[in-house]
View 1 (cartoon, rainbow, N blue to C red):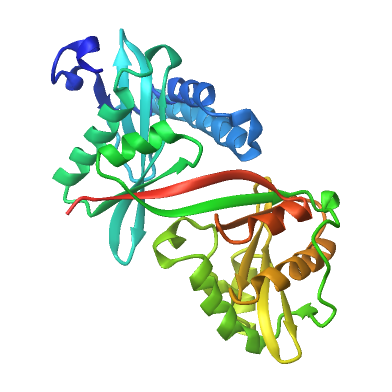
View 2: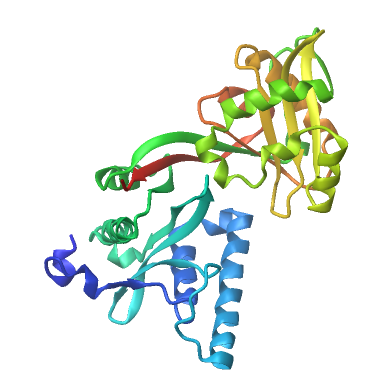
Length: 328
């Protein structure tokens, strides 16, 4: 473990705070080598932006000489240094919720030659200790469901499982017809204003409040009405909504959101009691009518009808376990 590297209780000799003026390129290299970035268009963009930031920070430093500049807009985190080289990284991202600040741990990466020596554990424990000293309330992270080793590490240092979410993706032209027989009694249409009340309730079921801080849209923007439509337009939020049901029984609503990333988002609000019948009908309807151009991405509870997404041609882009550590 760590003792084999640097002696007992000597992590401080290797761990230091991220220096955005000199570390970003090395951290970008480490992240790119540690994760399947090339399989994720947004990940490629993220690394490119990190390298662009590195160039801009070096330019700013030359202009101003402010090597120790601190602003909330700068990336935060810790690095592990061996022989003058960064071989481990942990990013800390602050969020605001209910008037309180908490943090998300991300980009925990270790150079392949230095793995299985306790570096990721030491970085995580140091982050927990630092935030606890600053009276932080809680820390969150997301770990892939197929990474049993990382899950065990995080549980061992105090994190507990909260949610398991799957991101489903599809290029609509690849939709299949293998979705079972459709119920001819179900009707699909544009969402009606009176559907909003049930949509809001079902959104709360599918996207619990404790994880909404991480979503790229506020669900209040789905509310019908001219004032909200004007606000959405002014803020560049593009949405469309469709409903499915039988006669006067609403069974689900899908909300499409245009994004600037690789895939547009589709937010599902379904009645759990009828989802198995209504979901394939609604998804087929949306996939045929969505604005052309982008793939679609759906964030949804891992265990809610995965077979329906698979039969329609969606692929499991990733399944993440959300974990939380209380600092109180």
